[in-house]
Length: 124
Image 1 (tube, rainbow, N blue to C red):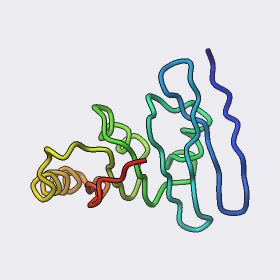
Image 2: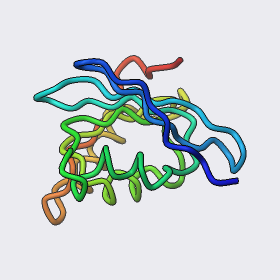
Image 3: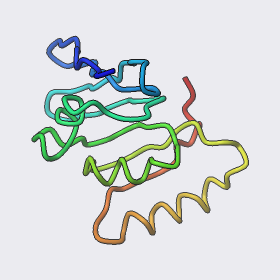
Image 4: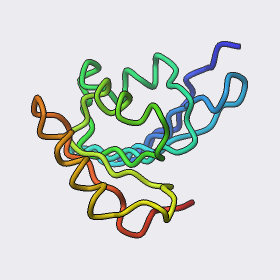
């Protein structure tokens, strides 16, 4: 199934479609006109049109991407070239300070995105 990139637009809110599995389309949230913040959870992949509107290559580089944590999270953030990232939905077994140190180390290599775990463990 090929996802349709339908989104609703207002002056400061865009709701791009994202894929959850291969046959279920969900909506993400892209806020802001000058600063771009995206809140996207439960995504397995981005349709090309969504990828375009939230990526640096599409000319709309995100200032902050709030994303759930999965095995593809770092790869996704690096691919989209976001300026910052906030990771949510992590288990309580993680050590917040230790994990943020590891993420800071990852971010500092090759001037990558500034990443942190969400302090309140953002859950939806």
